[in-house]
Length: 384
Figure 1 (cartoon, helix red, strand yellow):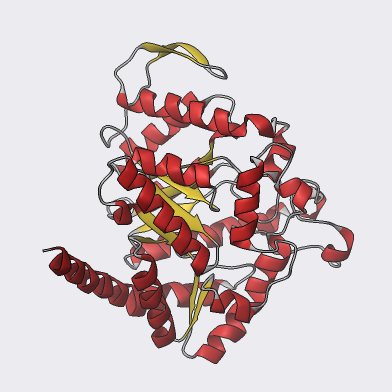
Figure 2 (cartoon, rainbow, N blue to C red; figure 1 turned 90 degrees about the horizontal axis):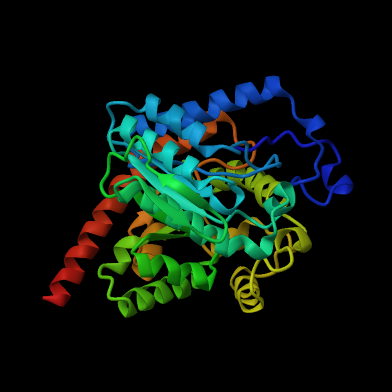
């Protein structure tokens, strides 16, 4: 949910649209229109049969207008009543929260109201957000894991009970309501490729979702998840893997590029970039982890172009035939279960976004599901 109306000369004046880009550039009247449009688009995807719709959390940036993803999720729960559509929060940034029990309560409410349709993603938040909140980035991972433990126990363990940790202490943990799903909503772990996160998710049997990365890096990370899951004795690792590329479908490859690239340019080269000191504040990552992330994602300061995005499968763009072919090839290589598609980029118009959603729903999703079914049958026959 970006605010795509950047100040004229934005790139010459500011390092980034995160943290210090003046909020005097935000027009609430325009923001009202944007929220309405974005919510309608998500509801439209649900109406057309997407398995789920997803929201996320970011702060003090025009990149994304969802500082509270649970509020947006609550609206979508109501908009999708009577539908089987899952509502995925990918995810709540736990180290940025002072009280994880509040997260447990809000997600339990949403799960009960939705009739058990919530997916709960947990993330650490990107480095820039530690500048925004004044939280010590060196505590990020420990705060994340302790907050996670509080929430999962509050969902799954009968209360009241006490919890004593390094960051959070409660005399009474006794969450009302309890989640609809038992023992708790499905937990997903989106990441940019941190080795610690991969192992952490595999050990717990959580679905791991790899966001924007070249396909060669995604394969390496997915293989690491499978290896870690096998080591922990967790079966069915491939069913807990998600891949998140941008997907855009038009009548022809040329039309798709013409419509997609200007908005992808805004997204990747204007809305998303952060200076390195802000994206990776001191002690946010261990040195070996930082080296790994940089090696997997390449030069983060370098501008990208359409051919790079498409050739490394960060963006799946083209006619229905082209998109289906790319997705089938990626599925054969990666073996993922969940395809989490970015169907809107930058300032893509409402009409073009709806066209994309409709084409994906009617021309892409049935083919992808059929391809996976055939692949599963083949794998089953080989195992037998």
